[in-house]
Image 1 (cartoon, rainbow, N blue to C red):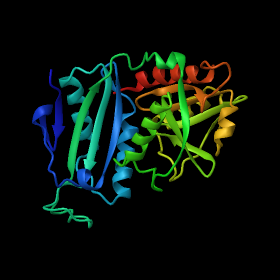
Image 2: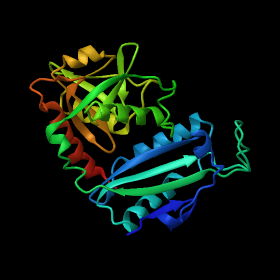
Image 3: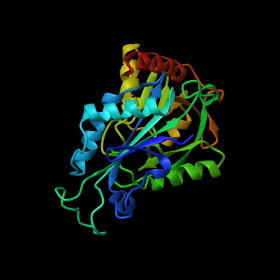
Image 4: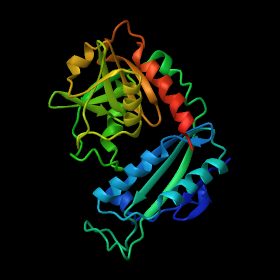
Length: 287
């Protein structure tokens, strides 16, 4: 059955949805996006995603084409129309489609931003088997642009990183800059050493993850020690455990880095516990 998607104010069957070839998201990667998880037919961390979306738009000097309340209604309507119980809602806003290709930004009063949303049905998202066995990562050099805190659609290098990992028989890649781990290709990275959860502090070097913020808050509420600092890939290989967080994976244990098993090669205690807490608390707060 065809999905219902949203394009510039209209709900359409996916095969009828079109965007101009002059859209700057297509030509220049001039756009931002958000992905909101759905559990039990409800949205997880919607407010956090809406706030980050507004920040990304402001950082790119792009006007906001739809207010938060209307955006929430579109999310809910797509979830309803597509019967999503567990899955994702993808949102993308670009600077729009001027009359022709040009490096200069178009006049914002003459060019409407493009707003696109669609759902992805992911049954078993919360009960992912990967969370039971953990994932393997490799390290790659981080050669992305310097504003990773803006959630843009410039995802070519992260996609290449995913393919490097796949070629190496791993699940994902952690990116390394000046010897220190920045983040995963589509997630924030953490290690656990002793009784401390260690993760890189927020800056322009990493995405300010919405799931990251919630998980760190829940960790501190559970009396876990969180240390936000740089860590090296070698330090990660010697950690007791490691994990990632993202909107689509929640909390996912990492059991191997560059072929080196962490601990006994199975998920430890911290990541599974944080996943449990995150899912429980997020379901309570879902809208």
